[in-house]
Image (tube, rainbow over all chains, first blue to last red; front, side, top):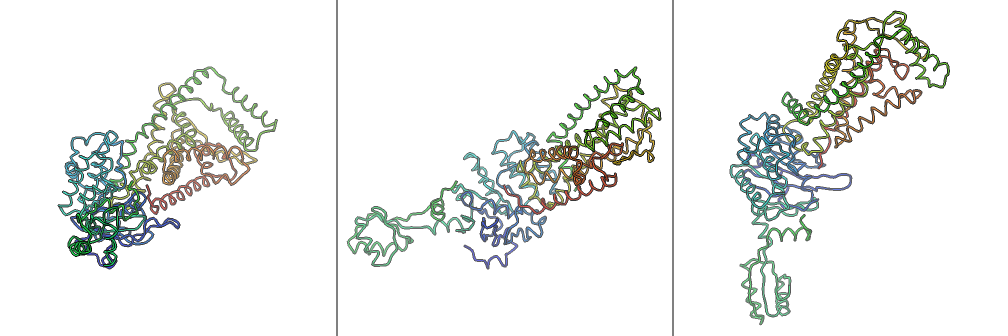
Length: 312
Length: 323
Protein backbone atom coordinates (compact mmCIF):
# COMPACT_ATOMS: atom_id res chain seq x y z
CA UNK A 1 0.00 0.00 0.00
CA UNK A 2 1.31 3.41 -0.90
CA UNK A 3 1.44 5.86 1.99
CA UNK A 4 -0.93 8.81 2.18
CA UNK A 5 1.90 11.32 2.07
CA UNK A 6 2.31 10.48 -1.59
CA UNK A 7 -1.08 12.03 -2.31
CA UNK A 8 -0.58 15.29 -0.52
CA UNK A 9 1.54 16.65 -3.30
CA UNK A 10 0.64 14.80 -6.47
CA UNK A 11 3.06 15.43 -9.27
CA UNK A 12 0.77 16.80 -11.92
CA UNK A 13 3.19 16.31 -14.76
CA UNK A 14 3.10 12.56 -14.49
CA UNK A 15 -0.04 11.75 -12.49
CA UNK A 16 -3.15 11.66 -14.63
CA UNK A 17 -5.40 10.45 -11.85
CA UNK A 18 -5.13 10.64 -8.10
CA UNK A 19 -7.76 9.06 -5.91
CA UNK A 20 -7.21 9.81 -2.27
CA UNK A 21 -9.10 8.31 0.62
CA UNK A 22 -12.20 7.71 -1.47
CA UNK A 23 -15.04 6.54 0.73
CA UNK A 24 -18.66 5.82 -0.06
CA UNK A 25 -21.17 5.01 2.63
CA UNK A 26 -24.82 4.34 1.98
CA UNK A 27 -26.70 4.50 5.23
CA UNK A 28 -24.47 2.66 7.67
CA UNK A 29 -22.96 0.41 5.05
CA UNK A 30 -19.48 1.26 3.85
CA UNK A 31 -19.18 0.26 0.21
CA UNK A 32 -15.78 1.75 -0.47
CA UNK A 33 -13.44 2.44 2.41
CA UNK A 34 -10.68 5.01 2.08
CA UNK A 35 -9.34 3.85 -1.25
CA UNK A 36 -6.25 5.60 -2.60
CA UNK A 37 -4.23 5.09 -5.73
CA UNK A 38 -2.49 7.02 -8.43
CA UNK A 39 -2.10 6.62 -12.19
CA UNK A 40 0.90 7.81 -14.15
CA UNK A 41 1.10 8.74 -17.78
CA UNK A 42 1.83 5.83 -20.09
CA UNK A 43 0.88 3.02 -17.75
CA UNK A 44 -1.91 0.47 -17.72
CA UNK A 45 -3.35 0.14 -14.25
CA UNK A 46 -5.40 -2.89 -13.31
CA UNK A 47 -8.18 -2.73 -10.76
CA UNK A 48 -9.02 -6.20 -9.56
CA UNK A 49 -11.72 -7.50 -7.35
CA UNK A 50 -14.59 -9.93 -7.08
CA UNK A 51 -18.10 -8.70 -7.81
CA UNK A 52 -19.47 -6.58 -5.01
CA UNK A 53 -15.99 -5.56 -3.91
CA UNK A 54 -16.65 -1.90 -4.67
CA UNK A 55 -14.97 -1.77 -8.07
CA UNK A 56 -17.81 -0.17 -9.98
CA UNK A 57 -18.71 2.18 -7.14
CA UNK A 58 -15.09 3.35 -7.11
CA UNK A 59 -15.12 3.88 -10.88
CA UNK A 60 -18.39 5.78 -10.65
CA UNK A 61 -16.80 8.08 -8.08
CA UNK A 62 -13.77 8.58 -10.32
CA UNK A 63 -15.94 9.82 -13.19
CA UNK A 64 -18.31 11.92 -11.08
CA UNK A 65 -21.40 9.73 -11.33
CA UNK A 66 -21.41 9.14 -7.58
CA UNK A 67 -20.57 11.73 -4.94
CA UNK A 68 -17.96 10.34 -2.53
CA UNK A 69 -18.84 10.45 1.17
CA UNK A 70 -15.22 11.44 1.76
CA UNK A 71 -12.04 11.78 -0.24
CA UNK A 72 -11.20 13.40 -3.53
CA UNK A 73 -10.53 12.50 -7.13
CA UNK A 74 -8.13 14.60 -9.15
CA UNK A 75 -7.90 14.11 -12.88
CA UNK A 76 -5.08 15.87 -14.73
CA UNK A 77 -4.76 18.20 -11.76
CA UNK A 78 -8.45 19.11 -11.64
CA UNK A 79 -10.79 18.14 -8.82
CA UNK A 80 -13.67 16.16 -10.30
CA UNK A 81 -16.30 17.74 -8.09
CA UNK A 82 -15.11 21.32 -8.28
CA UNK A 83 -13.89 21.48 -11.88
CA UNK A 84 -16.03 18.78 -13.45
CA UNK A 85 -15.87 20.02 -17.04
CA UNK A 86 -12.09 20.49 -17.10
CA UNK A 87 -11.52 17.13 -15.40
CA UNK A 88 -13.87 15.27 -17.74
CA UNK A 89 -12.22 16.81 -20.78
CA UNK A 90 -9.15 14.71 -19.87
CA UNK A 91 -10.86 11.36 -19.73
CA UNK A 92 -12.76 8.88 -21.81
CA UNK A 93 -14.58 6.07 -20.10
CA UNK A 94 -16.81 3.04 -20.25
CA UNK A 95 -18.65 2.36 -17.01
CA UNK A 96 -19.82 -1.21 -16.54
CA UNK A 97 -21.21 -2.02 -19.97
CA UNK A 98 -20.63 -0.24 -23.28
CA UNK A 99 -24.20 1.04 -23.47
CA UNK A 100 -24.63 3.26 -26.49
CA UNK A 101 -27.79 4.37 -28.24
CA UNK A 102 -28.92 1.16 -29.85
CA UNK A 103 -31.44 2.85 -32.12
CA UNK A 104 -28.73 4.95 -33.77
CA UNK A 105 -25.84 3.90 -35.98
CA UNK A 106 -22.28 3.73 -34.74
CA UNK A 107 -21.49 6.93 -36.60
CA UNK A 108 -24.50 8.76 -35.14
CA UNK A 109 -23.41 7.70 -31.67
CA UNK A 110 -19.92 9.03 -32.24
CA UNK A 111 -21.32 12.25 -33.69
CA UNK A 112 -23.55 12.61 -30.64
CA UNK A 113 -20.63 12.45 -28.23
CA UNK A 114 -18.31 14.44 -30.49
CA UNK A 115 -20.82 17.29 -30.38
CA UNK A 116 -20.72 17.22 -26.58
CA UNK A 117 -16.94 17.57 -26.74
CA UNK A 118 -16.97 19.97 -29.67
CA UNK A 119 -14.59 17.52 -31.35
CA UNK A 120 -14.20 17.89 -35.12
CA UNK A 121 -15.76 15.30 -37.41
CA UNK A 122 -12.32 14.13 -38.50
CA UNK A 123 -11.95 12.80 -34.97
CA UNK A 124 -14.73 10.31 -35.67
CA UNK A 125 -12.79 8.73 -38.53
CA UNK A 126 -9.67 8.69 -36.38
CA UNK A 127 -11.22 6.81 -33.44
CA UNK A 128 -13.14 4.47 -35.74
CA UNK A 129 -9.85 3.53 -37.39
CA UNK A 130 -8.12 2.95 -34.07
CA UNK A 131 -10.68 0.32 -33.10
CA UNK A 132 -11.01 -0.96 -36.69
CA UNK A 133 -14.74 -0.33 -36.90
CA UNK A 134 -14.79 1.88 -39.95
CA UNK A 135 -16.65 -0.52 -42.24
CA UNK A 136 -19.50 -1.15 -39.77
CA UNK A 137 -19.99 2.45 -38.68
CA UNK A 138 -23.23 2.98 -40.59
CA UNK A 139 -25.02 0.02 -39.05
CA UNK A 140 -27.34 0.42 -36.11
CA UNK A 141 -25.76 -0.44 -32.79
CA UNK A 142 -28.70 -2.81 -32.20
CA UNK A 143 -27.15 -5.07 -34.85
CA UNK A 144 -23.67 -5.00 -33.29
CA UNK A 145 -22.13 -7.95 -31.49
CA UNK A 146 -20.93 -7.39 -27.94
CA UNK A 147 -17.35 -7.22 -29.20
CA UNK A 148 -18.26 -4.51 -31.67
CA UNK A 149 -20.16 -2.57 -29.02
CA UNK A 150 -17.12 -2.85 -26.77
CA UNK A 151 -14.97 -1.40 -29.58
CA UNK A 152 -17.47 1.34 -30.31
CA UNK A 153 -17.45 2.14 -26.60
CA UNK A 154 -13.66 2.48 -26.69
CA UNK A 155 -13.88 4.59 -29.85
CA UNK A 156 -16.34 6.87 -28.07
CA UNK A 157 -13.98 7.09 -25.09
CA UNK A 158 -11.10 8.09 -27.38
CA UNK A 159 -12.95 11.08 -28.86
CA UNK A 160 -11.31 14.38 -28.05
CA UNK A 161 -7.84 12.93 -27.33
CA UNK A 162 -8.21 12.07 -23.62
CA UNK A 163 -5.10 11.62 -21.50
CA UNK A 164 -6.76 8.99 -19.37
CA UNK A 165 -8.92 6.06 -20.35
CA UNK A 166 -11.13 4.37 -17.76
CA UNK A 167 -12.52 1.04 -18.87
CA UNK A 168 -14.72 -1.16 -16.73
CA UNK A 169 -14.34 -4.83 -17.65
CA UNK A 170 -13.24 -4.20 -21.24
CA UNK A 171 -12.61 -7.89 -21.83
CA UNK A 172 -16.08 -8.93 -20.78
CA UNK A 173 -17.92 -11.03 -23.30
CA UNK A 174 -15.05 -11.15 -25.76
CA UNK A 175 -13.57 -14.30 -27.25
CA UNK A 176 -9.83 -14.95 -26.71
CA UNK A 177 -8.94 -13.31 -30.02
CA UNK A 178 -11.00 -10.25 -29.13
CA UNK A 179 -9.37 -10.06 -25.72
CA UNK A 180 -5.96 -10.17 -27.32
CA UNK A 181 -6.94 -7.42 -29.71
CA UNK A 182 -8.12 -5.20 -26.87
CA UNK A 183 -4.96 -5.95 -24.90
CA UNK A 184 -2.76 -4.93 -27.81
CA UNK A 185 -4.88 -1.87 -28.44
CA UNK A 186 -4.60 -0.71 -24.84
CA UNK A 187 -0.86 -1.40 -24.68
CA UNK A 188 -0.51 0.59 -27.88
CA UNK A 189 -2.46 3.51 -26.45
CA UNK A 190 -0.36 3.44 -23.27
CA UNK A 191 2.81 3.54 -25.33
CA UNK A 192 1.67 6.90 -26.73
CA UNK A 193 1.65 8.29 -23.19
CA UNK A 194 -1.97 7.70 -22.30
CA UNK A 195 -2.93 6.27 -18.90
CA UNK A 196 -5.29 3.36 -19.01
CA UNK A 197 -7.35 2.25 -16.01
CA UNK A 198 -8.81 -1.23 -16.46
CA UNK A 199 -11.02 -3.06 -14.02
CA UNK A 200 -11.42 -6.76 -14.33
CA UNK A 201 -12.00 -10.04 -12.67
CA UNK A 202 -10.14 -11.86 -15.44
CA UNK A 203 -6.87 -12.15 -13.60
CA UNK A 204 -4.92 -13.72 -16.42
CA UNK A 205 -5.80 -10.73 -18.56
CA UNK A 206 -4.72 -8.18 -16.00
CA UNK A 207 -1.45 -10.00 -15.53
CA UNK A 208 -0.61 -9.68 -19.22
CA UNK A 209 -2.00 -6.21 -19.79
CA UNK A 210 -1.12 -4.14 -16.76
CA UNK A 211 1.98 -2.50 -15.39
CA UNK A 212 0.51 -2.07 -11.96
CA UNK A 213 -2.38 -3.65 -10.13
CA UNK A 214 -4.51 -2.82 -7.12
CA UNK A 215 -6.68 -5.46 -5.51
CA UNK A 216 -9.88 -4.35 -3.91
CA UNK A 217 -11.93 -6.52 -1.62
CA UNK A 218 -14.93 -5.57 0.51
CA UNK A 219 -14.29 -1.91 -0.22
CA UNK A 220 -10.63 -1.91 0.80
CA UNK A 221 -7.50 -2.00 -1.30
CA UNK A 222 -5.59 -5.03 -0.10
CA UNK A 223 -2.54 -4.85 -2.35
CA UNK A 224 -1.13 -2.30 -4.71
CA UNK A 225 2.03 -2.57 -6.76
CA UNK A 226 3.62 -3.65 -10.01
CA UNK A 227 2.58 -7.03 -11.26
CA UNK A 228 6.12 -8.33 -10.68
CA UNK A 229 6.26 -6.96 -7.13
CA UNK A 230 2.96 -8.51 -6.22
CA UNK A 231 3.89 -11.88 -7.60
CA UNK A 232 7.32 -11.88 -6.00
CA UNK A 233 5.86 -10.82 -2.67
CA UNK A 234 4.18 -14.18 -2.73
CA UNK A 235 7.36 -16.09 -3.55
CA UNK A 236 8.00 -19.33 -1.66
CA UNK A 237 10.46 -22.20 -1.74
CA UNK A 238 9.12 -25.71 -1.98
CA UNK A 239 11.19 -28.44 -0.30
CA UNK A 240 10.65 -32.10 -1.09
CA UNK A 241 12.13 -34.06 1.83
CA UNK A 242 12.37 -37.68 2.95
CA UNK A 243 11.24 -37.14 6.57
CA UNK A 244 8.82 -34.28 7.09
CA UNK A 245 8.60 -34.75 10.88
CA UNK A 246 12.36 -34.62 11.33
CA UNK A 247 12.66 -31.67 8.96
CA UNK A 248 9.99 -29.78 10.85
CA UNK A 249 11.96 -30.22 14.10
CA UNK A 250 15.08 -28.86 12.48
CA UNK A 251 13.27 -25.82 11.13
CA UNK A 252 11.53 -25.15 14.45
CA UNK A 253 14.88 -25.20 16.27
CA UNK A 254 16.14 -22.54 13.87
CA UNK A 255 12.93 -20.49 14.10
CA UNK A 256 12.22 -20.71 10.38
CA UNK A 257 8.53 -20.42 9.54
CA UNK A 258 7.11 -23.10 7.24
CA UNK A 259 3.94 -24.82 6.09
CA UNK A 260 4.03 -28.64 5.79
CA UNK A 261 1.99 -30.32 3.07
CA UNK A 262 2.31 -34.14 2.75
CA UNK A 263 5.97 -34.80 1.92
CA UNK A 264 6.66 -31.17 1.12
CA UNK A 265 7.44 -28.04 3.10
CA UNK A 266 6.76 -24.48 1.95
CA UNK A 267 8.99 -21.72 3.24
CA UNK A 268 8.36 -18.03 2.62
CA UNK A 269 11.92 -17.33 1.56
CA UNK A 270 13.87 -16.34 -1.50
CA UNK A 271 16.03 -18.67 -3.59
CA UNK A 272 19.14 -16.95 -2.26
CA UNK A 273 18.21 -17.86 1.30
CA UNK A 274 17.74 -21.56 0.50
CA UNK A 275 21.35 -22.79 0.75
CA UNK A 276 21.79 -22.58 4.56
CA UNK A 277 18.41 -24.27 5.06
CA UNK A 278 19.35 -27.16 2.78
CA UNK A 279 22.70 -27.50 4.55
CA UNK A 280 21.04 -27.57 7.96
CA UNK A 281 18.57 -30.20 6.86
CA UNK A 282 21.21 -32.45 5.35
CA UNK A 283 23.55 -32.01 8.37
CA UNK A 284 20.70 -33.18 10.58
CA UNK A 285 20.12 -36.29 8.52
CA UNK A 286 17.15 -35.19 6.46
CA UNK A 287 17.46 -36.12 2.80
CA UNK A 288 16.46 -33.29 0.47
CA UNK A 289 15.22 -34.55 -2.90
CA UNK A 290 14.50 -31.13 -4.37
CA UNK A 291 14.22 -27.48 -3.48
CA UNK A 292 12.61 -25.18 -6.04
CA UNK A 293 11.16 -21.71 -6.07
CA UNK A 294 7.42 -21.60 -6.42
CA UNK A 295 6.09 -18.54 -8.18
CA UNK A 296 2.47 -17.80 -7.42
CA UNK A 297 0.39 -16.56 -10.26
CA UNK A 298 -1.57 -13.41 -9.63
CA UNK A 299 -4.61 -15.60 -9.51
CA UNK A 300 -3.30 -17.68 -6.61
CA UNK A 301 -2.25 -14.55 -4.83
CA UNK A 302 -5.67 -13.08 -5.42
CA UNK A 303 -7.35 -16.08 -3.86
CA UNK A 304 -4.89 -15.80 -0.98
CA UNK A 305 -5.58 -12.16 -0.23
CA UNK A 306 -9.33 -12.31 -0.67
CA UNK A 307 -9.59 -15.32 1.57
CA UNK A 308 -10.29 -17.85 -1.12
CA UNK A 309 -13.40 -16.13 -2.41
CA UNK A 310 -14.35 -17.02 -5.93
CA UNK A 311 -13.74 -14.38 -8.50
CA UNK A 312 -17.05 -14.17 -10.29
CA UNK B 1 -26.25 24.37 -25.65
CA UNK B 2 -27.33 24.29 -29.29
CA UNK B 3 -25.30 21.13 -29.82
CA UNK B 4 -26.96 19.53 -26.79
CA UNK B 5 -30.44 20.45 -28.03
CA UNK B 6 -29.50 19.05 -31.44
CA UNK B 7 -28.47 15.80 -29.75
CA UNK B 8 -31.70 15.54 -27.79
CA UNK B 9 -33.78 16.31 -30.87
CA UNK B 10 -32.03 13.62 -32.91
CA UNK B 11 -32.52 11.07 -30.14
CA UNK B 12 -36.19 11.93 -29.71
CA UNK B 13 -36.85 11.63 -33.43
CA UNK B 14 -34.75 8.47 -33.71
CA UNK B 15 -36.71 6.79 -30.96
CA UNK B 16 -39.73 7.18 -33.25
CA UNK B 17 -41.85 8.43 -30.36
CA UNK B 18 -42.78 11.60 -32.20
CA UNK B 19 -43.85 9.59 -35.23
CA UNK B 20 -46.12 7.55 -32.95
CA UNK B 21 -47.57 10.73 -31.48
CA UNK B 22 -48.35 12.13 -34.93
CA UNK B 23 -49.77 8.77 -35.99
CA UNK B 24 -52.12 8.75 -32.97
CA UNK B 25 -53.20 12.30 -33.77
CA UNK B 26 -53.95 11.44 -37.39
CA UNK B 27 -55.92 8.33 -36.45
CA UNK B 28 -58.04 10.14 -33.86
CA UNK B 29 -58.61 13.19 -36.07
CA UNK B 30 -59.64 11.02 -38.99
CA UNK B 31 -62.23 9.21 -36.91
CA UNK B 32 -63.64 12.40 -35.39
CA UNK B 33 -63.71 14.13 -38.79
CA UNK B 34 -65.70 11.26 -40.19
CA UNK B 35 -68.23 11.41 -37.38
CA UNK B 36 -68.53 15.18 -37.88
CA UNK B 37 -69.10 14.61 -41.55
CA UNK B 38 -71.93 12.20 -40.79
CA UNK B 39 -73.41 14.70 -38.35
CA UNK B 40 -73.29 17.39 -41.01
CA UNK B 41 -74.96 15.11 -43.53
CA UNK B 42 -77.73 14.22 -41.10
CA UNK B 43 -78.30 17.83 -40.12
CA UNK B 44 -78.74 19.21 -43.59
CA UNK B 45 -82.46 19.84 -43.21
CA UNK B 46 -82.74 20.14 -39.48
CA UNK B 47 -84.56 22.80 -37.54
CA UNK B 48 -81.74 23.82 -35.19
CA UNK B 49 -83.92 26.23 -33.17
CA UNK B 50 -86.35 23.46 -32.31
CA UNK B 51 -83.46 21.14 -31.43
CA UNK B 52 -81.91 23.65 -29.08
CA UNK B 53 -85.23 24.38 -27.42
CA UNK B 54 -85.63 20.67 -26.92
CA UNK B 55 -82.20 20.37 -25.37
CA UNK B 56 -82.92 23.24 -23.00
CA UNK B 57 -86.19 21.65 -21.97
CA UNK B 58 -84.52 18.34 -21.34
CA UNK B 59 -81.80 19.93 -19.17
CA UNK B 60 -84.43 21.82 -17.21
CA UNK B 61 -86.28 18.58 -16.58
CA UNK B 62 -83.13 16.97 -15.26
CA UNK B 63 -82.59 19.91 -12.93
CA UNK B 64 -86.18 19.84 -11.68
CA UNK B 65 -85.89 16.19 -10.81
CA UNK B 66 -82.98 17.06 -8.52
CA UNK B 67 -80.79 14.01 -7.74
CA UNK B 68 -77.78 15.42 -9.57
CA UNK B 69 -74.74 16.62 -7.70
CA UNK B 70 -74.01 20.34 -7.36
CA UNK B 71 -71.27 20.55 -9.98
CA UNK B 72 -73.41 18.79 -12.54
CA UNK B 73 -76.27 21.14 -11.71
CA UNK B 74 -73.98 24.07 -12.24
CA UNK B 75 -72.78 22.94 -15.65
CA UNK B 76 -76.32 22.14 -16.74
CA UNK B 77 -77.44 25.61 -15.78
CA UNK B 78 -74.51 27.09 -17.63
CA UNK B 79 -75.24 25.07 -20.72
CA UNK B 80 -78.90 26.10 -20.64
CA UNK B 81 -77.91 29.74 -20.43
CA UNK B 82 -75.42 29.37 -23.23
CA UNK B 83 -77.91 27.73 -25.54
CA UNK B 84 -80.51 30.36 -24.65
CA UNK B 85 -78.01 33.01 -25.60
CA UNK B 86 -77.50 31.50 -29.05
CA UNK B 87 -81.23 31.23 -29.43
CA UNK B 88 -81.79 34.85 -28.44
CA UNK B 89 -79.15 36.05 -30.87
CA UNK B 90 -80.18 33.74 -33.67
CA UNK B 91 -76.82 32.04 -34.05
CA UNK B 92 -76.60 28.38 -34.97
CA UNK B 93 -74.10 26.72 -32.64
CA UNK B 94 -72.43 23.38 -33.15
CA UNK B 95 -72.56 23.52 -36.90
CA UNK B 96 -69.53 21.52 -37.98
CA UNK B 97 -67.03 23.29 -40.21
CA UNK B 98 -63.32 22.69 -40.59
CA UNK B 99 -62.41 25.89 -38.68
CA UNK B 100 -64.81 25.01 -35.86
CA UNK B 101 -63.26 21.56 -35.84
CA UNK B 102 -59.81 23.11 -35.39
CA UNK B 103 -61.17 25.30 -32.62
CA UNK B 104 -62.89 22.41 -30.85
CA UNK B 105 -59.74 20.32 -31.05
CA UNK B 106 -58.01 22.78 -28.72
CA UNK B 107 -60.70 22.18 -26.12
CA UNK B 108 -61.20 18.45 -26.29
CA UNK B 109 -57.57 17.43 -26.85
CA UNK B 110 -56.18 19.99 -24.46
CA UNK B 111 -56.97 18.34 -21.18
CA UNK B 112 -56.30 14.67 -21.82
CA UNK B 113 -55.01 13.64 -25.24
CA UNK B 114 -52.26 16.20 -25.75
CA UNK B 115 -50.98 16.07 -22.15
CA UNK B 116 -50.81 12.32 -22.49
CA UNK B 117 -48.87 12.53 -25.74
CA UNK B 118 -46.48 15.03 -24.15
CA UNK B 119 -46.14 12.56 -21.31
CA UNK B 120 -45.13 9.89 -23.82
CA UNK B 121 -42.49 12.16 -25.34
CA UNK B 122 -41.28 13.35 -21.96
CA UNK B 123 -41.03 9.99 -20.31
CA UNK B 124 -38.32 8.96 -22.72
CA UNK B 125 -36.19 11.97 -22.40
CA UNK B 126 -34.53 11.01 -19.09
CA UNK B 127 -35.99 7.63 -18.06
CA UNK B 128 -34.97 5.95 -21.29
CA UNK B 129 -31.36 7.05 -20.81
CA UNK B 130 -31.43 5.45 -17.36
CA UNK B 131 -33.06 2.30 -18.62
CA UNK B 132 -30.68 1.92 -21.56
CA UNK B 133 -27.62 2.74 -19.47
CA UNK B 134 -26.59 5.61 -21.71
CA UNK B 135 -26.85 8.08 -18.81
CA UNK B 136 -23.43 6.89 -17.66
CA UNK B 137 -21.90 8.15 -20.89
CA UNK B 138 -23.99 11.28 -21.11
CA UNK B 139 -23.04 12.36 -17.58
CA UNK B 140 -19.33 11.60 -17.84
CA UNK B 141 -18.74 14.03 -20.68
CA UNK B 142 -17.39 17.51 -19.96
CA UNK B 143 -20.84 19.06 -19.69
CA UNK B 144 -22.45 20.00 -16.40
CA UNK B 145 -25.58 18.08 -15.48
CA UNK B 146 -27.79 21.15 -15.29
CA UNK B 147 -26.90 21.97 -18.88
CA UNK B 148 -27.89 18.50 -20.00
CA UNK B 149 -31.23 18.73 -18.20
CA UNK B 150 -31.81 22.20 -19.62
CA UNK B 151 -31.25 20.92 -23.14
CA UNK B 152 -33.76 18.16 -22.42
CA UNK B 153 -36.34 20.59 -21.05
CA UNK B 154 -35.98 22.92 -24.03
CA UNK B 155 -36.26 20.00 -26.44
CA UNK B 156 -39.37 18.78 -24.69
CA UNK B 157 -40.90 22.26 -24.82
CA UNK B 158 -40.08 22.42 -28.51
CA UNK B 159 -41.80 19.12 -29.17
CA UNK B 160 -44.80 20.05 -27.00
CA UNK B 161 -45.17 23.15 -29.16
CA UNK B 162 -44.71 21.13 -32.31
CA UNK B 163 -47.28 18.55 -31.19
CA UNK B 164 -49.89 21.25 -30.58
CA UNK B 165 -49.01 22.93 -33.87
CA UNK B 166 -49.25 19.64 -35.77
CA UNK B 167 -52.56 18.98 -34.01
CA UNK B 168 -53.95 22.28 -35.26
CA UNK B 169 -52.66 21.87 -38.81
CA UNK B 170 -53.70 18.22 -39.03
CA UNK B 171 -57.16 18.89 -37.66
CA UNK B 172 -57.70 21.35 -40.49
CA UNK B 173 -56.09 19.22 -43.21
CA UNK B 174 -58.00 16.11 -42.20
CA UNK B 175 -61.39 17.74 -41.73
CA UNK B 176 -61.19 20.08 -44.73
CA UNK B 177 -61.99 17.43 -47.36
CA UNK B 178 -65.25 16.44 -45.65
CA UNK B 179 -66.44 19.58 -43.83
CA UNK B 180 -67.11 23.13 -45.06
CA UNK B 181 -63.70 24.75 -45.33
CA UNK B 182 -64.57 28.40 -44.78
CA UNK B 183 -65.93 30.27 -41.81
CA UNK B 184 -62.82 31.56 -40.08
CA UNK B 185 -64.59 34.85 -39.46
CA UNK B 186 -67.73 33.36 -37.91
CA UNK B 187 -68.61 35.11 -34.64
CA UNK B 188 -67.63 33.38 -31.44
CA UNK B 189 -68.87 34.27 -27.98
CA UNK B 190 -66.62 34.07 -25.02
CA UNK B 191 -66.56 35.50 -21.56
CA UNK B 192 -69.53 33.75 -19.97
CA UNK B 193 -69.02 33.81 -16.24
CA UNK B 194 -70.53 31.07 -14.17
CA UNK B 195 -70.80 31.10 -10.41
CA UNK B 196 -72.73 28.90 -8.05
CA UNK B 197 -75.81 31.03 -8.35
CA UNK B 198 -75.67 33.00 -11.53
CA UNK B 199 -74.78 32.99 -15.15
CA UNK B 200 -73.42 36.29 -16.29
CA UNK B 201 -73.25 37.24 -19.91
CA UNK B 202 -72.35 40.88 -19.34
CA UNK B 203 -68.65 40.29 -19.88
CA UNK B 204 -69.34 38.54 -23.11
CA UNK B 205 -67.26 39.41 -26.12
CA UNK B 206 -67.73 38.58 -29.72
CA UNK B 207 -64.61 37.60 -31.63
CA UNK B 208 -64.08 36.26 -35.10
CA UNK B 209 -63.34 32.54 -35.00
CA UNK B 210 -59.71 32.83 -36.11
CA UNK B 211 -58.95 35.24 -33.29
CA UNK B 212 -60.76 33.10 -30.78
CA UNK B 213 -58.90 30.04 -32.05
CA UNK B 214 -55.53 31.73 -31.64
CA UNK B 215 -56.39 32.63 -28.04
CA UNK B 216 -57.55 29.08 -27.30
CA UNK B 217 -54.37 27.60 -28.77
CA UNK B 218 -52.25 30.13 -26.93
CA UNK B 219 -53.79 29.08 -23.62
CA UNK B 220 -53.45 25.42 -24.48
CA UNK B 221 -49.83 25.95 -25.43
CA UNK B 222 -49.15 27.47 -22.03
CA UNK B 223 -50.87 24.52 -20.34
CA UNK B 224 -48.82 22.04 -22.39
CA UNK B 225 -45.52 23.70 -21.47
CA UNK B 226 -46.52 23.20 -17.85
CA UNK B 227 -47.38 19.57 -18.61
CA UNK B 228 -43.98 19.15 -20.28
CA UNK B 229 -42.25 20.39 -17.12
CA UNK B 230 -44.24 17.93 -15.03
CA UNK B 231 -43.41 15.14 -17.50
CA UNK B 232 -39.71 16.01 -17.22
CA UNK B 233 -39.84 15.64 -13.45
CA UNK B 234 -41.56 12.25 -13.72
CA UNK B 235 -38.95 11.22 -16.24
CA UNK B 236 -36.18 12.19 -13.82
CA UNK B 237 -37.84 10.39 -10.91
CA UNK B 238 -38.58 7.11 -12.66
CA UNK B 239 -35.93 4.90 -14.17
CA UNK B 240 -38.37 3.19 -16.50
CA UNK B 241 -40.30 4.89 -19.29
CA UNK B 242 -43.34 2.77 -18.51
CA UNK B 243 -43.49 3.93 -14.89
CA UNK B 244 -43.14 7.52 -15.98
CA UNK B 245 -45.84 7.34 -18.68
CA UNK B 246 -48.04 5.37 -16.29
CA UNK B 247 -47.78 7.99 -13.56
CA UNK B 248 -48.60 10.74 -16.02
CA UNK B 249 -51.61 8.78 -17.26
CA UNK B 250 -52.79 8.01 -13.75
CA UNK B 251 -52.48 11.60 -12.57
CA UNK B 252 -54.34 12.93 -15.61
CA UNK B 253 -57.17 10.45 -15.42
CA UNK B 254 -57.21 10.22 -11.63
CA UNK B 255 -57.24 13.99 -11.31
CA UNK B 256 -60.08 14.30 -13.79
CA UNK B 257 -62.14 11.67 -11.99
CA UNK B 258 -61.48 13.35 -8.66
CA UNK B 259 -62.63 16.77 -9.87
CA UNK B 260 -65.79 15.26 -11.34
CA UNK B 261 -66.71 12.99 -8.44
CA UNK B 262 -66.01 15.10 -5.40
CA UNK B 263 -66.44 18.76 -6.26
CA UNK B 264 -66.96 19.49 -2.56
CA UNK B 265 -63.38 18.71 -1.71
CA UNK B 266 -62.23 22.17 -2.66
CA UNK B 267 -58.52 21.46 -2.24
CA UNK B 268 -58.92 19.66 -5.55
CA UNK B 269 -58.70 22.97 -7.31
CA UNK B 270 -54.99 23.05 -6.57
CA UNK B 271 -54.37 19.94 -8.66
CA UNK B 272 -52.77 20.80 -11.98
CA UNK B 273 -55.35 18.65 -13.71
CA UNK B 274 -58.13 20.99 -12.58
CA UNK B 275 -56.50 23.93 -14.31
CA UNK B 276 -55.50 22.07 -17.44
CA UNK B 277 -58.60 22.69 -19.65
CA UNK B 278 -57.75 26.38 -19.99
CA UNK B 279 -59.31 26.56 -23.44
CA UNK B 280 -62.52 25.06 -22.06
CA UNK B 281 -62.78 27.63 -19.29
CA UNK B 282 -62.07 30.33 -21.80
CA UNK B 283 -64.94 29.08 -23.96
CA UNK B 284 -67.31 29.18 -21.01
CA UNK B 285 -67.16 25.66 -19.64
CA UNK B 286 -67.54 26.02 -15.87
CA UNK B 287 -64.44 24.98 -13.93
CA UNK B 288 -65.05 22.20 -11.41
CA UNK B 289 -64.50 24.46 -8.39
CA UNK B 290 -65.62 27.95 -7.54
CA UNK B 291 -63.01 30.63 -7.48
CA UNK B 292 -61.05 29.18 -10.38
CA UNK B 293 -60.66 32.29 -12.45
CA UNK B 294 -58.50 32.29 -15.54
CA UNK B 295 -55.80 34.12 -13.62
CA UNK B 296 -55.96 31.48 -10.88
CA UNK B 297 -55.59 28.67 -13.41
CA UNK B 298 -52.68 30.31 -15.20
CA UNK B 299 -50.90 31.02 -11.92
CA UNK B 300 -51.56 27.49 -10.68
CA UNK B 301 -50.11 25.88 -13.81
CA UNK B 302 -47.13 28.22 -13.64
CA UNK B 303 -46.55 27.28 -10.00
CA UNK B 304 -46.73 23.57 -10.83
CA UNK B 305 -44.31 24.01 -13.71
CA UNK B 306 -41.80 25.90 -11.58
CA UNK B 307 -42.07 23.55 -8.60
CA UNK B 308 -41.69 20.38 -10.67
CA UNK B 309 -38.82 21.87 -12.64
CA UNK B 310 -36.99 22.71 -9.42
CA UNK B 311 -37.50 19.17 -8.13
CA UNK B 312 -36.28 17.76 -11.47
CA UNK B 313 -33.11 19.87 -11.40
CA UNK B 314 -32.29 19.19 -7.76
CA UNK B 315 -32.72 15.43 -8.23
CA UNK B 316 -30.91 15.28 -11.53
CA UNK B 317 -27.93 17.38 -10.50
CA UNK B 318 -27.42 15.89 -7.06
CA UNK B 319 -28.22 12.25 -7.40
CA UNK B 320 -25.80 9.36 -7.45
CA UNK B 321 -25.98 7.37 -10.65
CA UNK B 322 -25.83 3.71 -9.69
CA UNK B 323 -26.11 0.81 -12.10
